[in-house]
Structures are given as C-alpha cells and as structure tokens.
Length: 225
Image (cartoon, rainbow, N blue to C red; front, top):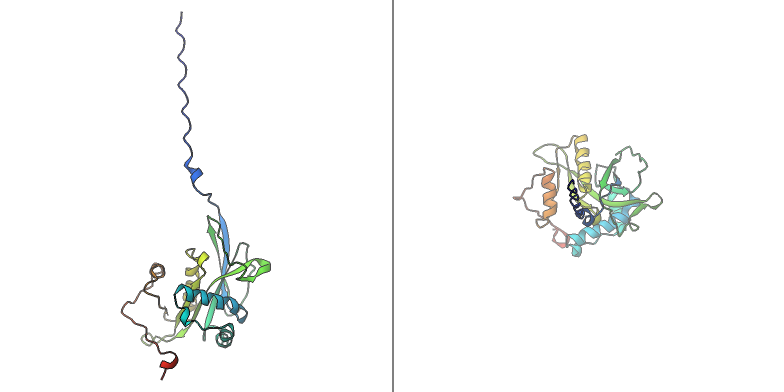
C-alpha cells in the first residue's frame, strides 16, 4: 500500500506593510509667478515687511506705514529706482498676465504633502481666482565703481513662513539676477544676518560669495550730521 502524501508546508503569514506608517505622498501642484508689484499691492507688502521685522528681531526699528510705502516706492519707472517683484501662488493655473516692463515669470512647483497657509485669506491678491501673495524682493540700482557698470542691490528678500524651503526664494532672487543680465548690469549684491544660517546656506547653494571681511556702516535719524 502506497504511503500517504505529506501535507503541504504551511503558508507563511504575510509581514505587515511598513507603508501603513508612512504618510500618503501626493502630487500637488502649486502654480506660481513673479510679477512687478504696484501701489495696489502695498497692504500685502506692508504686512510682509512687518513679518520680516519680527523674524529678524528688529521690530523696534519698524516704522513703515502703508501711506509711507505708497508715497516712496512707486514714483519712478521699474528698475530705475526702487523696484519690487511680488511672488504669487495658486492651486489653480494662473491666467497669463502681460506687462511691457517685465513679463511675469511662471513656474509650477510639485509638492508631495499638502501645504497649509493659515493666513491665506489675509494675503489674497485675487480672491476670485484663489491667488495668494507668498513673498517679495525689493531692489534698486547701485554702481560698483571697480566694474564701471551699474548693478542691483537687494534690500529685502522675504518668503512667508509656510512657503519656505520650496524653491520660491530662489525664484525671486533669480528673477532679479536675470533682469540684471538683461540690462547688462555687473552684479547683484545684498547682506545677510550672521545668525541666519539657513539663509547663508541658501545663498551659498546659489553660488553667492559671502564676504565676511566687510562691515555695514550706517547713519540714521539724529546721527545724520
């Protein structure tokens, strides 16, 4: 009599998937653009300047008002004096804007996690089209004598907190650099606080040279002779 066949070995239990412990990764596009600011943007610019003063721990020096910004920033054609590029973002494709002085620069950023903007409604520049102001850069011409060429000096570069580390700061600074090249200017320069290690690392990644040997000298208020 033939021997009975051995029963098949037990099927090993499946191991639990570690993916259950990881957040779901999505492809979430953010449509962004850099455009020239106008006097209509002053309320948003004023709020961001104050936020920048808070971040830099310099609120004791903050005295700007919407009125003073309006009367001093927009009196000359773009790039001949104070100029501001504004960064706008939207979850929807942006309508193409036209401007003779500076055609807006557009880019789509893809995120893998949702972005939460707690001040979204405060910074709406176009509520009907769900467009929000996310940052700005303010710059103006200077003149590096050794080059015998004009340049741009960046006074402020600011991206609101929830939009940082996503490439928007580089987008703003690159827009200034590209405009300098377009106009045949010699360089773009700015200063950075020595404790702001994240900003220093960001600028070094953009191949900017940090000049530790230079000091800022300033006369202000009653110290001006």
